[in-house]
Length: 411
Ligand SMILES: Nc1ncnc2c1ncn2[C@@H]1O[C@H](COP(=O)(O)OP(=O)(O)OP(=O)(O)O)[C@@H](O)[C@H]1O
Ligand SMILES: [Mg+2]
Image (cartoon, helix red, strand yellow):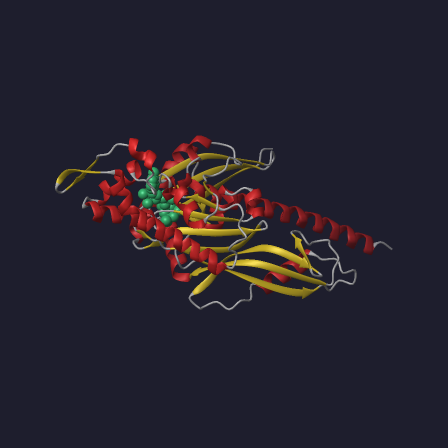
């Protein structure tokens, strides 16, 4: 009998709201994206809710577009959360293994994971998600699955995502007001990395920057392990504002010019580009050169890159990211932004969009604006697989225990 389940990722961005619908087929162990909905975002600033009603109505539009394409009704979503209040902290804990045969059990793993979460956080913050980074058994590190291994001491390294209680509440409220339940809240820097980075990059060390409209989400992997995350409250909307002020044109016109003509760096070979770019403002149509546009936007882009650079430096992982920098999010579509990144970081820089490891609608989702939305599907799928294996283990344990008691009851 086919066992199908629908999972939905809801990316409530500062600029757009994206809903991604995927279908899980448990029999075939298969996942396929079957619907995408997008709407313009209103009522969000720098990744945080500023107008509940506006956000709710934008969510409704995005969700109903996705429902129409997928031909399903959406009741529950995995929602991404960003904003400068999201912090990632590393923690480590240790326990002694108590079984006489010293074999590590699931119970030991949950004990050590719990112990790792006993960090002091401010009262107005809460834990969003705890990601296991590494398990260490008797000083031997690099163990991803310690159950069944024998040892005296089990240690866990974890990355804990915390966020402001009120910001989380506001986000959940907007989704609920749209008639939808929140299955889970997931940190955006983590989920974007699931959608964009490949295993080799993570192993060699890499910095991911999801450059959106109001925020830039950062994730740093070293030796295949997520070691540092941060959200900085800057993004493409500031570039648009600079253009709007610099050219004295409305924001909508500045946005059009930015997307159509602006380059992060201007090279001599770009001389062949159109010289006169028409900009329509209150003073009628005026002409600007590529060089003039670049002159206005470059300082802001440099500022964003230097903020990312500072974050990498303060994380303590500078020099350990041989794969360089991967840029995603809408702002990464700016022409020559990778070249500017290379100049500032002296590292290889690539532009990334959601990878094609999930089936379905590749042409549509192969766009850096969908990295968080598709990442949420990866996150939900991971959770689903973990729950399934827990259930299977429970069934196995129950049967095993039953058999055990039957044997004990034998005369
Ligand atoms: N071709 C382009 N060139 C430059 N910027 C672009 C281009 N296309 C989109 N953008 C910019 O990308 C930004 C939107 O990106 P994205 O959709 O990733 O943001 P978001 O997820 O809504 O916001 P956030 O993640 O910050 O909350 C906008 O500032 C938009 O102007
Ligand atoms: Mg975003």
